[in-house]
Length: 149
Figure 1 (cartoon, helix red, strand yellow):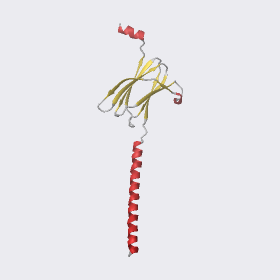
Figure 2 (cartoon, rainbow, N blue to C red):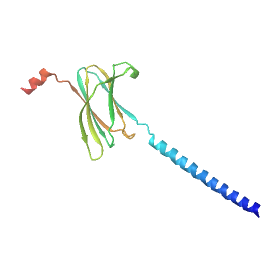
Figure 3 (cartoon, rainbow, N blue to C red):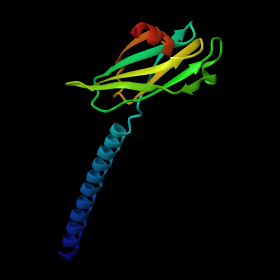
Figure 4 (cartoon, helix red, strand yellow):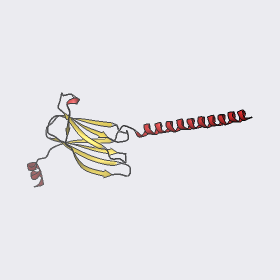
């Protein structure tokens, strides 16, 4: 009688242990899935523009549907050079406009030399934003004063 009671208790404990191990595996699996969801590496989208004239102003208007702000930088490489030789150029954010869904950002860079200017956009929920490009000549102070008269 004592032996069967002992066996029964042992079996109950084994069953509890097995259930706990299964529950632990389920929790570990859910944790692993959540970790993979949260560790998304932000995509970097590029918008290259070939500029064939010197002293131009290159403007990009980026319409992002993401609520999070994107990171922007512009690289430059001379004609015929490899992309690995690119340098980061200073750019100017001229306007940021919040929309109902997303943000519109306008950036400009002075293109003193011919070559390829590439806008890099990071952090847009893996969706390419709508980008429009405008290239215009640089207006110096003398030209500006003449047009103002």
